[in-house]
Image (cartoon, rainbow, N blue to C red; front, side, top):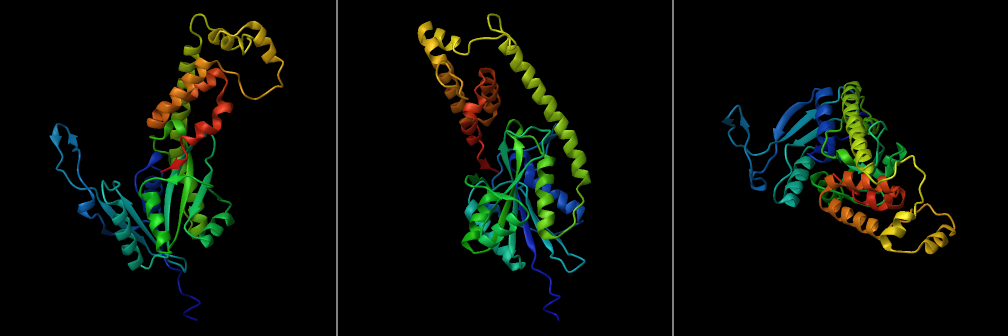
Length: 335
């Protein structure tokens, strides 16, 4: 009888800062909602360095190393207990060793599964609900994800400790999974409570633990409106740029090949021949436009903030569908 009533082993939720701060928001909300208790620290000093200090009201705040803190929750019923680890910062060196030591600590607590949250930048509109994708360290956990209708990511990368700790868990044959929630590509640096809510909703079902998400809904509504306002401002700016003197209005009917012919020096005869080809979803772009797009792609690969400018240019040329796959590839790496 004791065996039948035994509790399942606890899960560890590990979180560090990342895109949209999804992991930190989700883990912190979990701690607050379950009134979890701080039970210890883990922040080996040889993995961190301090490269800046804070100043408040003109006074320098004493320097300190980033903290890593454990919180625990004892399930009052027969369900599993939870352990949450929140790191204030990703280690500046020795990430592999750091993650291994953390897993050793988790094993000592009897943890049977490691859970991380991450974000996946996409063309999501702020008004839309983010999808949650998943990745697992073993086939059993992958099957658990599919049972709750979480689509596994086909390929890609999960950056930082939110991904590395799962890679090391896999080496230890320890169960683990990452829940990746979509965020708008143009707002990767903006904290995203809606994405955190989506990930927590799936986690709640899988862990069998009731988590009230109303407070996150309120936060999400506020951020969504701010992002929608920002998008509208970007669109107004793009529209203003596209209506420079000498350019056609969006409502004016124009030959999509005329600009290409003018800039490339092709004759009107060749242009007519082109229009007689079978219809295609691809927009025929001038060589100059193609070159400019490739330059913007190169800039966006080095600096993700340039993706907004790239998207605006693709929209202006009516070529986003043509480049959509290449554009979304810029954000395949989740954090």
